[in-house]
Length: 122
Image 1 (spheres, rainbow, N blue to C red):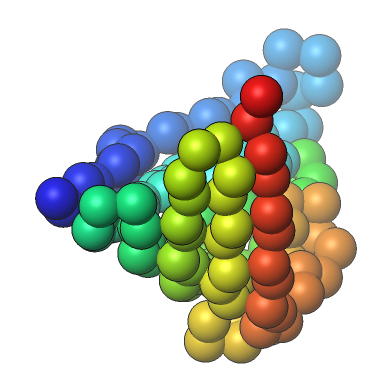
Image 2: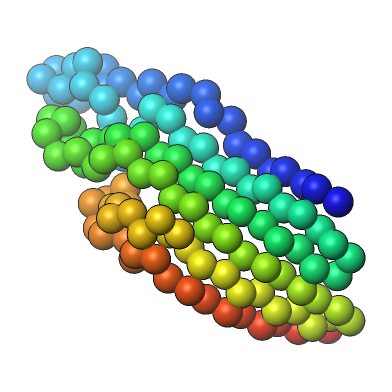
């Protein structure tokens, strides 16, 4: 069974109207990228699921002057999940392409990283 969870890539134009300080009028609001997309494509095979995640975050600004810029990021992840009788196991890799990216506050994100998680639901 193939499933797809998708987010919309609709433009969000957040413009400062300079209400409190007219000098910022017409600037883009900080931390508000014009485009953002989160996708998941998964294939379920009985008790197992294999999935791919994609995140696109367009360039955005860190300050009201629009001088400090966070560049566009495109992150990929791959995982495999298995579960039975309340017990679950997930293994995968995030930032598959090892892109040097920053978050919306300008802090660096980890490069390629591997993970494994377990869980039990009562």
